[in-house]
Image: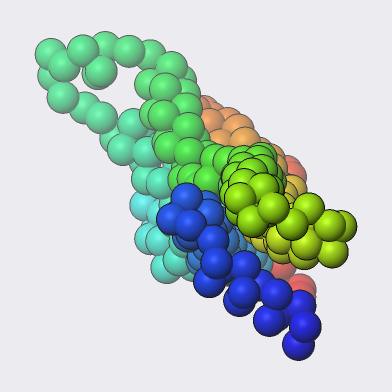
Length: 240
């Protein structure tokens, strides 16, 4: 109770700059927590859906039916854009079009690369926010502390009472802003590391899926077979 009353007293006696710093830290905290909750839900859901979605794709009899199955299973749209890009590139047949003159393997590779980059950008979206909050919030809090100490010492000098008990209280209250900055920064840094690990895992699965797609779409037309790695994954998923 004493700590909360000290915070309230500090905010009541502080000036507009200190209030502004507190509002900035509060906004940073709200933004990082909202993003953390939404992004963690999306990434964990995508990670959980990935094995089943990929297995359903490779179990389909044709590429177009596999794309349809992947669209239904991949609700977060992480892997489906790659399959759609491969299907579109494989079916390009426009007489006279520049894209139709490109060799099939290169055409599919270019489409997969573009779709892979787009999916990875979607996975990494917002990570800069967490990194920025984690790196700047302590300094914003320190700014509030420095300004609060300056303001407190100025008030003490004006009153002419420089005893230690008159100095320790205002200076201690000013340190609240540094603590506030750390409280905002620490969850953001932890979330950045945890979500970054999920992003890397999904990116690795995307790379493997894109490689398998390219190998399958560009295989000889007589006997195109899914890569052995994806066949094993499909069999494992079917027996779960």
